Structures are given as structure tokens and as C-alpha cells.
Image (cartoon, rainbow, N blue to C red; front, top):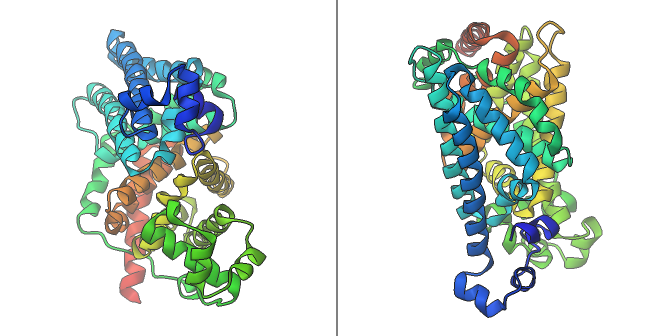
Length: 406
């Protein structure tokens, strides 16, 4: 399975290919995995995760210096990705294409690594408990850096980056983050919708109708059920009109996700531009984005769940969008506050990981309440933990005052 997925991707891998690579009959494969390809994939995923977790855990516990344990764990993780790139691709890339049950497995695996990060932070911070969003963000950010290098075929570079990645992770190790917890229980949306929300969907030409149709169908029934005929019928058009605009279903689906994503990012950009400074703009942008996602379950479903039905192509699409965010994030920062490229990549990955967790677990309505935490994940590596908290609290107060005055 590991070899087949590396060669063809999960979606294109067949039972016949698996049997041929393993040197067994298809009958034997079904005797071992009665549910076929997916069950085999899950077994391969679990085995690869166990191997990686064992290597990381051994490195962690064998280090006597508690302050160095997280460093050893990161080094072991980077070396495992470098040494077993095919298995790493299955864990970090192909899992997204294997359906909701695979994503549940991924969340379970992430919790194993989150436990190590939480323990390390607690042991080196006077026993203080670390907020769950922080450990989830650290694991998601580290995974995102590994994923980017795998996609680019540069996984051999990862071990050399562990020092910088450790510095990024430790920038969150502070009691200051707990200050933001008081905002979470009472906070609601504090950014008013802009004209982007109202304007979305006003175009009613054939192209726009097709995009609306594919988005509705994918969100309701899943990407795998889409057909060109079904999309055309839902849009009230002929199959010929569909093919005049889109070559096939994947290109149509990706166009819909891109359109919805651009609308969401435009909303965030408008809000961010109104900030008094860079940290304030980042917090306003993330607050607006959270409010937008919470108000649009269709966009949330497509951009954070269904897009991965395309397998690595979906991951590449998402990573390309995140790369644009990273460039904008760094370019808008004053030179004295600008994070390194790796820190920005990991921070954006941390934010995305926490948002994805909420969307995948049906908790999108909570997103507006956690915007301060997401802003902390974005800003702490650049401003320091206390500086980030101070900037977020000040900007949140300004935003609330503006809403009250309006």
C-alpha cells in the first residue's frame, strides 16, 4: 500500500495493483482486508504512525535534559520523514483522500504528538498547563512544514531545520497565552460584514450558476458523487453548456473552491486593512475570517473537507493558497517584526490546523470566539508571547468600541 500510494496516489490505487505489488491474489487480499482498499490503507496508516510515534517517543524519553526533550523529538520526526518519505507521504498527504474515517484517524494520531508537546511545555514552564489550542497549533504547524517539503521533494532538508522549528515552537511557551482564555467564553463576532459577503453570488451568468451548483452538490452529497450531468442539471443548463465552461468535474470543483476562498480572503483583507498597525490588522483579518467561515457552512465544508477528496492535488491547491497568505503575512509586517519564512509557514499552518479541527468536528460556530487564540498563533513568534497578547487585547478592545459606537 505504501508503495502503490507513493506511485499512484490513494484515489488511483486499485486492489489489483496492491495484489500485484504484494505478490498475492486479489482473493488473498480480500481475505486479509474484507473491506478492500480502504481497510488496507488504514492498516498501513496505523503501522506507519506507530513506527513514527515510537521513534519520536524513544528520542523524547531517552533525553535526560528536560529542556532538550522537545528538540530531540523534533529531530526524530524530521529524520523519520527524511528516511521514510513514502510512508510520510501516506501519513501527511494521502490520508486526506481516504475519506472522513481517515481524517478521524489523523486526529487521533495528532493527539499522540500533542501529548508530547504538552508534557514538554509543562515540564519546562514550572508545571503550568498549556492551553489545548497551543499544542494543537504546534503539531499542525510542524506537520505543515514537513508536508510542504514532501510536496517539493525536499524532505532531506528537514533535519537541518529543526533548530529553527524548535525556536518557533518555544515562542508559544508562556503563561501569557492563558490570558486570552477569558475572551473565549464571552466573545462573539466583532467585525461587521463587508460588501464582499453581500456581493457574493450576485452574478447569475452560466459560469456563476455552475459554480453555485457544484458547491451546493459537493457540500450536500460529497465530492465523490459529482458528475458533469448532475452539475449541469442542478444549474439548469445542458451538458453542452457545462463543457463550454469546464473541461471536467475536478476543474469545475476546484474553480468553485477557489472562488469561495477568494471571497473569504477578500473579506479578511478588507478588515485587516483597517487595522491601526500590523498586529492589529492581523487580528482584525483573522476575526473577520472566522466570522465569515462561521456564517458560511458551505464554504467551510468545501474548503476544509471536500477539497481533500482530490488527494494530493487538493493538498497542493490548499498549500498554494496558504503560500499566498504567508507571502502577504510577511510582506505586510514591518521589517523589525517580520517573521522568518519558516516561522511564517509554521504559524499559518498552526492557524489552519486549529480552524480545520473546528470545521471537521462540526464546531464552526465557535470560530469567532477563538480568533484571539488564532491571532496569538500568528503573532507570538514575531512579537513574543507577551507582546502578542498585549497587541491582541488592545485591538480587541478597539474593535469592540467601534462596534458599540456603531
